[in-house]
Image (cartoon, rainbow, N blue to C red; front, side, top):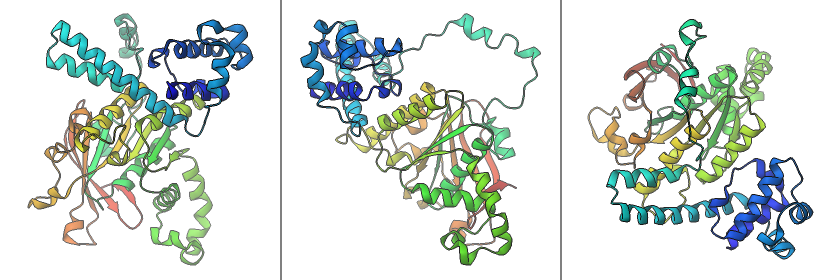
Length: 410
């Protein structure tokens, strides 16, 4: 009851949050609280102010406890903790729904697959899933007579990778996995910049590296600067590099990337931040990046790591569908990869990490032989497409300069 009232009190005191999140009355256990939210949503939909006065005069106060109830919940308002309150609210709703599903399954003799599918569906809050076949076919009815302007996916910035994947596709969960020092973050930033320069809006959740460090890496790779120079620009940049500095800064600024670098973010927090950015930029094509998956804070820390990662990967796929955009998440592979003579990663290396392999539409591994041979002359980077639901699998050969962070075609 207290959590529900804290959520409602925060919405009442800070009504702009109503447009940042799509809470449904069904998420609330108590009828009074459901009625409070329903009244708020109705007022907001009409473009009216949501406050104590409008709630009491335009709504039906007898259905939610009147002024006493509203004063009580408003005293619990806390905008800073709102994300956490919502996360707790949704967790409790899911637990109730799980019990309901299991009860129905028991009475109707559901098989294990149906039970599992129903439970997994709770990961996503988006229930508006109705699509008519007439609408769907009309979307492509005239396509054979319309020239296609390039790929429908977001360009990867690497021609060989683009050919193999047809670009980063909406609703896809793409996992980019590797051992440390293989260039995961630099590969991600390459994709971030390419997407931004195409007019997309990249959103980066950097759960390990600060936004400032990401900025420095983006500048170094864009200007082709040795990243060590970023530590003391005044002394280490050449005169030629200083002359081009402002052009490089302008190029990086044009990516329009939004970075969230708080450690230990939960899926619920991330979803709310994505929704807020989307609401502020409704006409922009989103693409979401996460560095990296196992640093996402699980909703229930009492669960095993295996179950937590499975829940997180399913949630990331749900986000890709909910916001109709690609979600690219980095993942770190365990040391077991290095026990083999051939240290190139394989899909089986992901199987110990929950259901990542199963949930992903595309799985890409990064491998640099030079890391093991210590050959500084070898700049080869193998981009191993191990899973691709809608395209080719195989290895794309590219180049990686570990001093500047530049990823490029061979």
